[in-house]
Amino acid sequence: MHPGAPTGDISGPLPGSRRPIPQSNRNLRALTRSVALKIKTRPSPGEDAPLPMGQTALPTGQMALRRAVKDSAELAGRLHCNAEELHAATAGSRLRVPEYYLSLIQEQDDAIWRQAVPTAAEQNREALAADPFAEDDPLHAPVPHLTHRYPDRALLLVTGLCPMYCRFCMRKRKTLHGSPITPVMVARGIEQVRRRPAIREVILSGGDPLMLPDARLAALLDELAAIEHVQRLRIHTRMPCVEPGRITVRLAELLAARRPLTVGVHFNHPREITPASRRALALLADAGLPLVNQAVLLKGVNDDAEVLAALFRGLLRCRVQPYYLHHSDLIPGTAHFRLSLPAGMAIVHRLRELAPDLSMLHYVLDTPGGGGKVPLGAQQAG
Ligand code: SF4
Image (cartoon, rainbow, N blue to C red):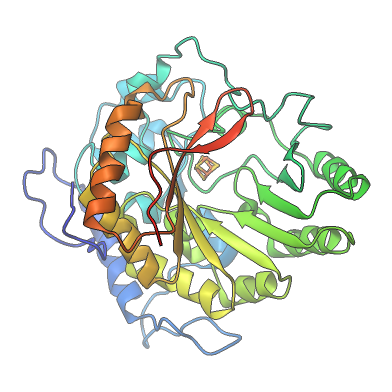
């Protein structure tokens, strides 16, 4: 844990490291850092930040998505861990760790590692429903991948693909284990939105909507914005956190041109706030997009009030409003991330004492059966 590093320095020494970081990983980290530090946070409109002469640019936009480890043997080699164990831990699920996110790992089993690298505990499937929040229940889902649970809001899943398959994902039935979400399925979801005049806000999620090419994303947003009763759009994405190179001036302008649109991001640990992710968030904020963060309280990742305070204050400095802190969900294969309710409430109580300025943060539990979010503990006044 690293409670005293709110800005996520990714280059420091590794006190107490149990295993050294492979040289290739260190090289990449050094490259990421040296490049990112030279990038201006506010590039000129219409172009990405220039790099100094002779500097090799890291790929951006869609190209950035090519730089990921998707094979357990390769990941084991990169992290110097047991290939057979990692293969067994990954069995039956997708694996993808962006090179960028891999470069943030400092030691085995640290907060970054735990979010990205499969462990044997995932094979403990417990007797839990794969869809505990009944998102796919026909009662709430008139067609696959569209959930209309709240009167004025609908959730539209536009892809099952993600830049990283987070090992704790609450929607892992669609992401780590799911079958593809096709354009025909998305079109059927949009048709349902069109037929339901009560829907005023559409939340695009997945998977990660920013896995779609820019042109496809723009077409989707335009189609939704053309529906008269749809007044607001929201995109949920982990891209600025796990693959910040995907965020470009062009993408930020594309999203901002389709306002009112809010971008919900997902950071869980202060070490995820790096020069590269700060730059990605600055591009979105400079374009005029409201940014909110949804974090998940995860054992061994951020179950520490000082870590959470550093995370949320770091996000505020990036113009991101910390909005939800989700209590860890009852998802099969995630018991190793789960805290008891009393433990979670004690951490948030301490967080309220440490950081009374984080008044807009809501600590919530998604209730099983599709009952929606309920607040946990006293919300901070203010
Ligand atoms: S990016 Fe989001 S949807 Fe995809 S695996 Fe991670 S938490 Fe789940």
